[in-house]
Image (tube, rainbow, N blue to C red):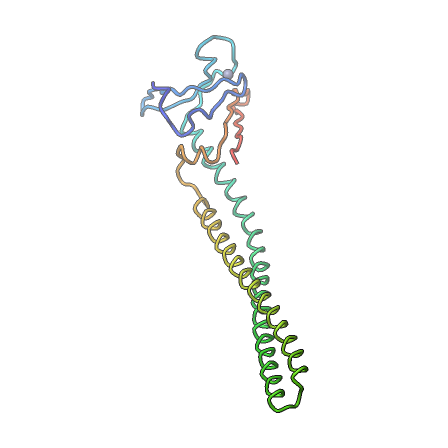
Length: 213
Ligand SMILES: [Zn+2]
């Protein structure tokens, strides 16, 4: 018997009746040795706790494994909801892209106007003064459009960045879609504590999990 051994559920399991921690011990049976957990109070003093039956550790671990997978199933369903966010982000990206295209063609048109005004001045269709006013007006318009274009470009970069983040999150969810084996790492990530109740008259006992997330 080694109660200090760092098994997957160590320091996580408590007696639901007296809140004592549960000790790990092993019994040799005809067909092998099995680990069990038992209320510490039951071990150290008689008649202080009614939770006198031990519970097989592998049974408890399998129950935790099943419960974590049930929790992951609900996460997986929650993930389906977050997928709905993606088209929204995409359409935002598309909005920005179409505004960028529109700005580029507006800047192009502005530059055409500048050339036209300059030609008009050369051909003396407009006066030096008229040219100066129109030239200033188009230059200012183009400067504003370019400023807006820079802003849109930076927005697009951020949008692409956040989409990258979404992919990472999906990868993490996929990593934990189903757990086939329980270990200390998984337990620490998912479970805060487990309480095991006394065996009832109908032979059942209550096991409650406090989730760490
Ligand atoms: Zn107890």
